[in-house]
Image (cartoon, rainbow, N blue to C red; front, top):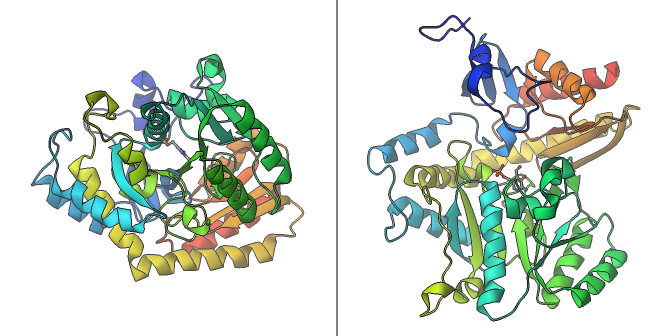
Length: 429
Ligand SMILES: Cc1ncc(COP(=O)(O)O)c(C=O)c1O
């Protein structure tokens, strides 16, 4: 066993004394697995056991853990400039990142606003949209969102999210939000009618959506044409479009950004997670020049008075720059292609298995609904997770949905190992 100096207790035991974990009911789930290192697709626990990280640590470490290209670049930056206030100052990593990222973004994105995580990227986007109208002298304060969407845990992000396990206790404190169903067909006529009525009755500021795939809703995949029709309808009616690409960004859906696959481009885009290649927390909210212009004025109060202490941290910006270079490399593009074709072949092989109720694939994301009922955080979900962990694979099912979103550097053999474990599970349940 790998023990920490000065104590005979495991990490797992020491953890229980003072730490409060996210999304955890400590009474029923008191024990956390101590992870001591990670490399490539593997996480290693304190007993030295290895686990394939089948979800790239919540969709962040897509170029593999401790990727030497990323860590090397950040180590170099660390010797030059660690942190500086980003109000009144600027620095090379942030400027270079803006020059590199803006041309890659879909549509007419032209400005980056930095924050710390996916929730703050969304919070910033919502505030930007609301103040955009405010600055133009319009009282538009209602937001539109998809049912079952997930956009984060801060108040604004929670308000536009649809999952009640996260936001139930705070529902009465929420922003004003109207929800529409997710488009599952080419012809979302009923949704368009509902939207028409909503727009006639409400002063809608913006629509926020996870383009193509709703991650926390068990990787729900939209009908692309259906989503396209909703977006063009809203654009015609002058509603600002906020694409939350926190999960879908940086290659997950097969293209660099999911919004590239849709004709109507967003006005505002939220990015985080794989932005910094799994190394450091950071987010950006990008917007068009038209949005920025509404804040550009001789009046101080027209400006956007939102800022976090670590805004545009130079190390995180450097990780993001290095990550983008990897994303564009032939090696990573081949990796993404290989995962997509492997998923497709695997699905062809197992789709008719009686224990699969439904399945979907979008880019490197593969989701299988097991033919069994299971609550989101119930025993069955835990048993399935334990089943995979016992086989050296980290997957974190959402209810009865097992999904994969592996690092792009996963090898065919490692991917085969994960598929093999899924087949074993299907044959067992
Ligand atoms: C689409 C989407 N938006 C926002 C968030 C919130 O990101 P964070 O957990 O970094 O606050 C998530 C997290 O899973 C997400 O999937």
